[in-house]
Image (cartoon, rainbow, N blue to C red; front, side, top):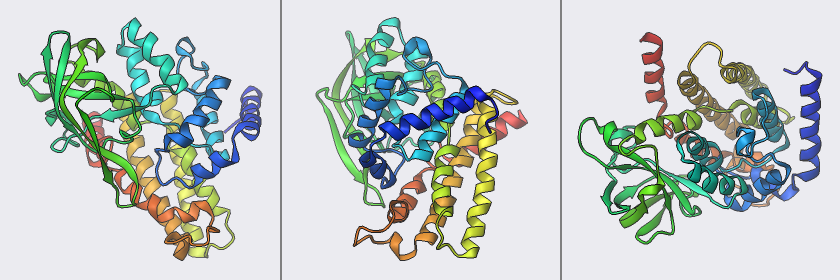
Amino acid sequence: MLHDPALIAFRDEVRVFLTAHLPDDLRLAAARATSVFIDPEVSLPWQRILHARGWAAPDWPAEFGGPGWSEIERYIFAAECARAGAPNLAPMGLKMVAPVIMHYGSPEQRAHYLPRILAGEDYWCQGFSEPGAGSDLAALQLRAVPDGEDYVLNGSKIWTTHAHFANRMFALVRTSNEGKPQAGISFLLLDMKAPGITVEPIRTLAGDHELNQVFFDDVRVPRANRLGGENEGWSVAKHLLTFERGGKYAPGLIGRLERLRARDDVDPVLRAQLDREAVTLKALQALELKAMRGVGGSPALYASALKVLGTETAQRIDTLACEVAGHAAWADADGQTPAELAVAVPRYLNDRAASIYAGSNEIQRDLIARVMLG
């Protein structure tokens, strides 16, 4: 992938930094994580290390505190972090709400929130799905009624990742029932410590506490915390979902797959399947690089395509990891099983949701067809 001496030098700089500054305990914790969402006790220390180097937000423009890297430099950085086994950083702040604040936020909102996101002072969760509004997000019913300088919120959100850790939430709320459902939605930034918010855990099939249901009982949110105009939150959400759905799947998956392929106890049939996935990942990597350069398609089209390909490839690799692990995938009583195999089954179970969240893959295929067929 690399021929430019400047890019090779950049890659080597990143490798040297990771060797010197990525602590072994954080690397091990990342290897034993069962989800792409790493607990903040692991992700935040790593974010602070990166922040001290100016590398916590590779995708941010320099004007907002990012490193000002080119697209290919960002991709190299992601690939090297995956290769070194670095923890994922929490995406809800750095990769999801931050670009929306940059685009739609007032100067005051940018000045307040962006430095706090960069430093890890604010930890965000996403308030989109509801018990009756998942893939059909336009059906959401969490009411936000204007009252003086505030909105008063009543209702609930569900499948809210890391709400039990978060001190901030970005949420879609219903501010009008007039016209099309999408036309009555607003986008709010709110304080999770506000009176009237209750967070209840949801245990996953893998046994993790990653998800929650969040209840709102007369919760007051300043109207100044709205991003974009009232009843214009659907446009804000579509902008955000481009960042949530798209992205860099290949680097992390390549790292996982290569650790499986490096084992010398894999039978030939499984090895052939692993090799086939390696070819698939090369194709996915090529598509991601093409998307970054903006070649041959709209950002929304690429985002949907990458979401489908990335999540379904991850699920196939999960299945192969369970096959490779065998009995070790079910128990690690002696603590000696390699981390990648010890968490194979929980990771497999957790990733069953990957093709559903951020808009199910069926919805993504429908969006792709609409764009391609007009």
